[in-house]
Amino acid sequence: MRQKSRRRRGFVRRSAHALTAALAATVVLLAAPVGQQLAEACGCKKPAIRRCSPSLTMWKWCKRVYRTDEPVVLDFSWLGVLNPPCPPGVICIPCPPEVSTDVFFNVTPISGGPTTAFGAMTVTFVDGVISADTITITPDGGLPWTPGIYNVEGVIDVTLADGTVIAAVGDTCICIVEPSDADPMLPRLDLENITPDGPGGTQVHPGDAQSNTYVITNNRAVPCTVDLIGQNDQRGGVPGVIPSGAVIVDPFSFADPGPGDDYPIAFDINVPDPCLPLPALPQLATNSFDIMPPLVIDPFSSVQFDVHSRGWQLCETGSGCEQVLEGSVRWTDGQFNQICVGGVTISNSAVPPAYDCPDSGATVLWQPADFGGNPVLRGQANPRPTGNYVMDYLFNPPQILIDGQPFPVQLQISPATTDTCRVTAVVQFPAPEVPMPIDFFFAIDNFGAFPAQVLGDDGPPSFMPGLPTGFDHIAPTAKTALIIDENGDGVEDSMLMNLVQLQGEVVCDPSNLNDHGQVLDLTNAFYAHNPGFGFNTMVIQGQTVVNPCFGPAPKGTGTGVAPAELHFSIDIRSFAGGFPPNTCICDCDASGTLNIDDIDCFVAAFLGGDLALADCDHNGVINIDDIDCFVACFLAGCP
Image 1 (cartoon, rainbow, N blue to C red):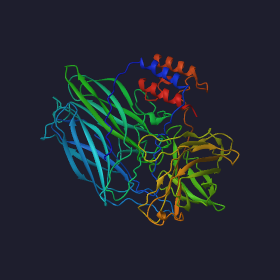
Image 2: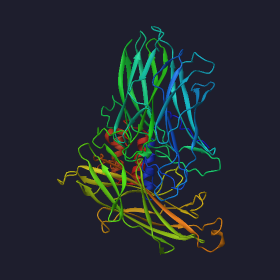
Image 3: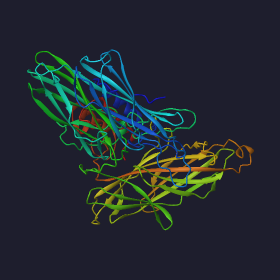
Image 4: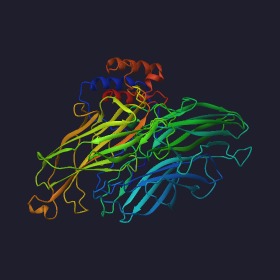
């Protein structure tokens, strides 16, 4: 089925009385076991390596307000990946080639009325490349439009050679107003996105600040007052799949597959600095918005303003938000209009970093290397233009026991042609006829940064035992960080952040390309630092169970000699940059300990309107979402 459209969320005023109830629930829950925690935002999960593993997303935005007597031009862009890199020496099942890519749009007035369908519009698909186009839209029955806001739902379908369809769905809005009574060639109120951007919309390096520039113009002879709300809505979730039955398709997401990863947003009049703070738990950022103070515009006058936005440092290329400004205009003669305009912010590691914020930097692309016959991940880290260094991670020989017996392991490293590098451990063993336990132990040493040096770990790994709803495979995730001295003077200069994800599967018959294996349950695995094992060593260990293999001979003969394969895959994405600000947002009194005093501190800050302490989700507004954010942080604990 197709991916469900994430409708633009309305802004509902909620009573502050919920604060007491929510925090009371927090106190009660402190005595109860904490359930499964949420995964790190932007931690997209690649499916198991033997599957057809596509992803697809589309962004849409309307750059200005239109008159009732003119057609609307809607910008849109898309990114699809059909075949992520396959590790050398491993047989991967590619997706069938793309045979057609079509785009459809449904336009519906939000006040009610018929839906107008546009498409199919055939566009060009280039694997792994952000592409762009426009479409011209007119109302059902032709011009003129009825003034108001129209919802535009966009669908992009990629049809593969075997008939499988990959689909991404999302919606935005367009806005229609009457012509100016002073000049009928102009809308009575014009709101336009004048941001200079290239094909595909505004693309920035992960972690860099970005601002869309808008101009609002009153084209009438009377003053008006404008009210605007800005919102970011993530579009990099898991696409839908309409299967043909010929190939098993395992889609992945470019961003958090749930409702999170909505980038922070702020009007410059509220927050002048475009380097917006990045929340500690961005996967909880599900309603990122900001409200502009009422704006009075004189007749035939214009006001220009910026809207800031920013993606997280560990976002993958393809994570991106549609930005919508929506509101109303009231003239002093009693006339009224609804207005809206759009933009987009897309994270793209191929865009050179701007180093424009204290905690910005550059994505690290890891490449395979060799150290004394052992595989090494080697990456050039660029926390700033003048602070480049080379970082090495050594993979020690993994220890993997199947039914208590050790087996030799082959390690294979895929070059990071995208944001993520994959290290795969492959074990050949007799196909199991009964359930068998599997014990695994991985030790990854950081043994150097050249000419820089590692001063230590920034605390233990921030471990999340599961991933949110939407991923096909549940596996542990951890975020680690190393403190770097770039010039050898003993001073902490930068930080290397790593997002690490583990998955495992067993392929019963490697010679059968239709054998897609069984996914292993790794929810009991855990990450830790083990100083006794080596310098800055990260350990991943745990136990799981492989089920019996069934299928064609020789597996069905009961001989137990068929060679099955066990695959563990470790995905690593890294970012070298400055020190992020203190992200323990629920340590309200900055004591370093979470206790009842932090709840009292937050309640006082919330009721007193203290933005510095009560704006938990860093969106510039104190509301019920900050209570939810505080509760989630408090239960999860601080690193």
